[in-house]
Image (tube, rainbow, N blue to C red; front, top):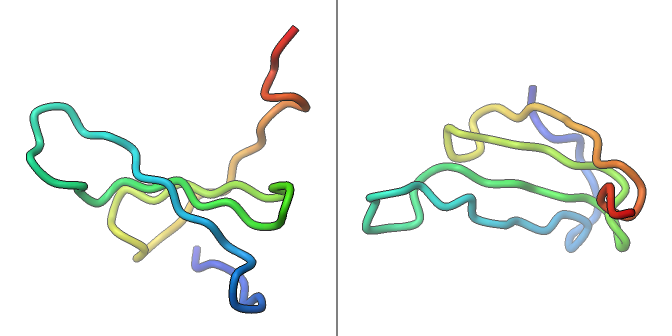
Length: 61
């Protein structure tokens, strides 16, 4: 799955740390919207994405 086309600035990227790797690696979480309304994960540096859901308030109680 590729990301849907959106205006510049819609998406924000966050690095997912990979243990024992001396650089940023390929794993990222990408959110869309402000506040985020969609969430995606890629482990192949933007070739493919998987959407996922985050509970309201991040699941905090």
